[in-house]
Image 1 (spheres, rainbow, N blue to C red):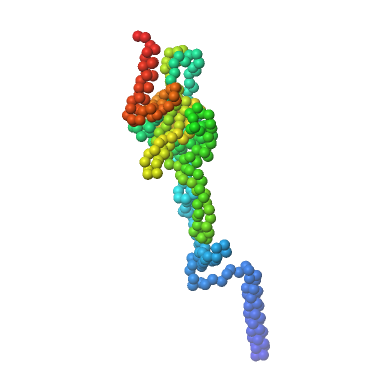
Image 2 (cartoon, one colour; image 1 turned 120 degrees about the vertical axis):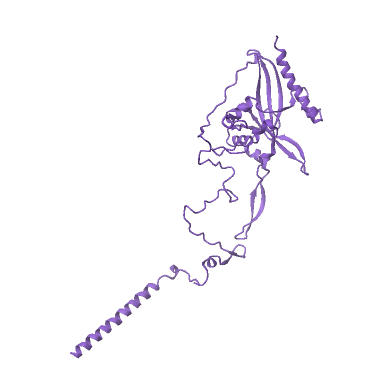
Length: 356
């Protein structure tokens, strides 16, 4: 009996040794896989951010640079949204930002399909008398404050007039003409206009803050709408004998850009480009004008020009020498009086055509 018990104990010990040896062999086979698939050995005592930011040698420059740490995984609702601007801050300036809530006591009609009222037809034989004038609208005057309303509406569209004109040229809604003359004879492209406003594209040297690599990048100045202080308009006053009425027709609008001297003093205001006003009327009819008396009384830019809700002074009248008032009158006050006398001539001419 004792021999049987000893035999069974010996067989049990033998089985235990065999099972232990088999488990050890299996663990060795699992750990002896392809060495390229194993993760690199790291020092557990070294922080994770230091292991990620370990300096490496840039093969292009031979300098040691720090590799930026991998971004932490964040929740989709709490992660910051990437910026769309080139400088990495906020929303691009030229990107409209539409209001996500009704920015008023009631929702306004967003449809901008308004069209201007067609002009009355004037036959060539019915033009009894006419006079061509050039006037300047100075936006710094109190009556011309709507021209300085530099805000965005609920659709994110800027309401400043100069931005509306430039965007209409960019979207090919209207054609611009060169200021070499005011007869709309030479078209000018949007790229040429932006070159005048922001200057030529320049090549500047830039250094990559990560790799330290030096490269040339293109840059140009930003357009400042505040440099446009005046608008020149060309208009014709004509007496229609068929309708027995004196009518005015605006032919063109030109933004005036201020040119400064080297010492910062004002030198002159020159036209940037000319726009043919009859082609521009459908564009101006789509944009509202700020009403400083009543926000509920909407008015379009086309209404402002047609109803003459602006203040201006005459700088030129069609004459034999084709010269402006400043060419033969040097004093500023006398220029204004000379321009006002030209307006009075038109008013008196209309009164003289009637008999009482």
